[in-house]
Image (tube, rainbow, N blue to C red; front, side, top):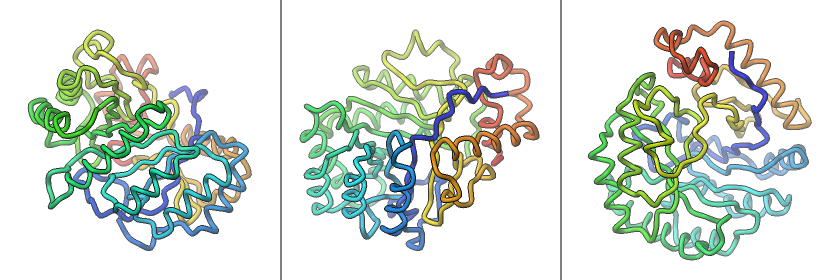
Length: 319
């Protein structure tokens, strides 16, 4: 069974809206509808209730900047003196860019979705302008760093990613950080060593970039020792110890998108993030007792040594 001692949902994913115009092929997060926007009153109530027990926020969507009240939301977060990271596709207007440049109080950084930038119209042109402006403005302040988020999807190969990274290096000011996650929409992950080979290719294509891993990267995808073949990485935790808590406009919250049966219907039934943690931990353990994990995982040393979460692997079957 997974050791949940380090489970820490005090880092909250505040899902401002599920709406997003980018429509990435690998997206698994929602229905993109405008009816999923958080109200300003809701956000104020949430921050008032949980700010004292909250470490920081990830402000995301969908695409958070598509929320009609995005500037007011950021100002509200700043009023409550809560640190946050903005997670965005950077495909926003000049007006939004200017607002973000002027309002950096409490912002820990920006995580930019750097995938599928050459598929439609002037998508890359807008991304490049905004990325370079943000990187240039804040490169001297490490805590405001801009990192590029990459998703290793089912259509990827080591060669295609090397070419993609090479193009980005030629066009963008700098690529100091990559945040790497895996396609969870329809990709077999267990023992899929091609995914590990692609991650190695990303590192080889940009050896000076540091790598941060999303929680869904399991050890079985590496047919090599990451400590020896990846130059600089962190966050590669095989037991998924600290998944954040996704909070939505209707008051509900989930443990993660791939395990949506682990759910809180109304966060306002609780008073601290610790209480939210306890309830999700209870449901997590209860679910793990009944989950039928992948057969390949049952004999895996990583699972048997409790270095990989059986439920998280089960999530790939929509647990």
